[in-house]
Length: 111
Image (cartoon, rainbow, N blue to C red; front, side, top):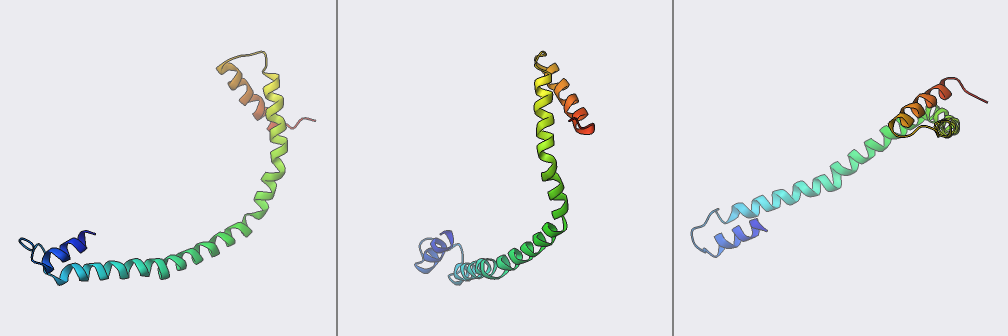
C-alpha cells in the first residue's frame, strides 16, 4: 500500500518526490516474486521434507508409543487408588502424599 502511494506520488509529482518513479514498482515486483517463491516452491518443499522426517520418526518410535499406551490404564488405576487413600488428609499434604503413593504404586504394582 505504501509502495503504491509512493509510486503515485512520484508519478503525479505531488510535492517533493521521496523515491524515483521506477523504484517503488521494482520493490513491489521483487516483493511479489519473493512471496510467490516462498508460497509455491520453498513452502511445499519444506512441508514435504517435514512429512518425510515425521514419518521416519513415527515408525522408529512406534514401539515406545505402544508401551506407553499399554501403561496408561495401570497408571490411571494407581492415581485413583492413591487419591482415595489420601481422603483423610487435606490441602497440600494430600497432594504430596498422593504423589508419593502414585510413585509407590507405579514402582511396586499392586493387584
